[in-house]
Image 1 (tube, rainbow, N blue to C red):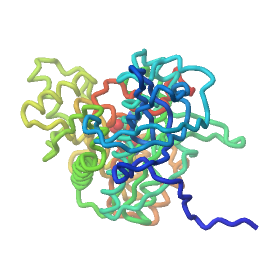
Image 2: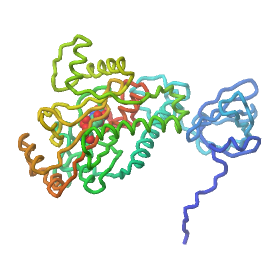
Image 3: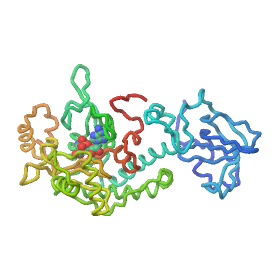
Image 4: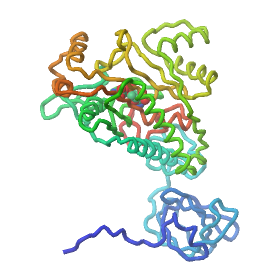
Length: 436
Ligand code: AMO
């Protein structure tokens, strides 16, 4: 019988190793990204896993159409004028496949020059554009940075169910479905499960999809997004969570600098300098914006998007920070699991993190006492029985704990300077879009 032992097939020289093969003949594979005919030869750009390689083809060589997939036999030749310091002189082309039609959208220019709708309708090809795909390589880097930092702080990575019986975040923005005749929902967040897992591992995190049946058609709302969540036990105050997030963001910015320099340069990203992140209470923030910009406060319980932008402007002017933690949100605006501030039940030991004028994180300390949690649910006229399995952890003992959830697409978009979160979403789901 045939058996496999996990030996990765040696397919010859990988594109990443070409530098040490200058002067040699190699075989490399990729897609023909762009052909530029010159007098007597052509420049051929070969799109590979992460790079676009410059190749030269003599006129006698017959070149397949753009987006053909090929194996090239080529000589690696030193070329100081090329970005890599070398280029490939093509000797032979084996065509693996050819497209049936040319892409309806030009993808091999610097920018994909089309509407956002077209960009998303043809996502499977527009993502092949060098800059478009760099967005998602960087997004990988963000997650790798978060993971690497959290692992270093002894967090355990978990994967919680996305089919659930009760909503964690309240409100109407929940997708209902039929689960073998029983009412079920798509998880709005891993909130209940990450809390339960604090009782098991003390520190946990998850990077996974969550679902919100938002009816708003805005540049910052998606119906499915990727949530970066962590939750930690034995905290003395919710400030420890903000400290941990600050550490995670600092680490990740350095991680991107170290491992994703090419993408940062290609996308011209200005990474924020994080030394300290200022902290301001919700009411102080409201008053500050009102005073600085001479605006009346109309909503004392929440920020308007415009206020978030003005707060950013103001904090940036005063401190040079592009981030700001806003703490002590009104209890009425926070979910039932949020811990009220000792001595002032009107507000909670919770926070939001704003980055370049947009909320990217919500977090805070949770109620860990069973009696306190049930009492708060009664106060909110919730049906306690529906939350029986959630409340078991409180009943059977939980340490003081808290955590946060960060929207990956919002963070990526703001980091790269996009106003619309869809540009930082691989295949966005919004009220108008379920394909591709
Ligand atoms: P919250 O509901 O505030 O908190 O969500 C946390 C973060 O997720 C992002 N986000 C969204 N991103 C895109 N589209 C949406 N529709 C959307 N909704 C939210 C935002 C937001 O700051 N369980 C808590 C977190 C916690 O306390 O641990 C929660 O889910 O960046």
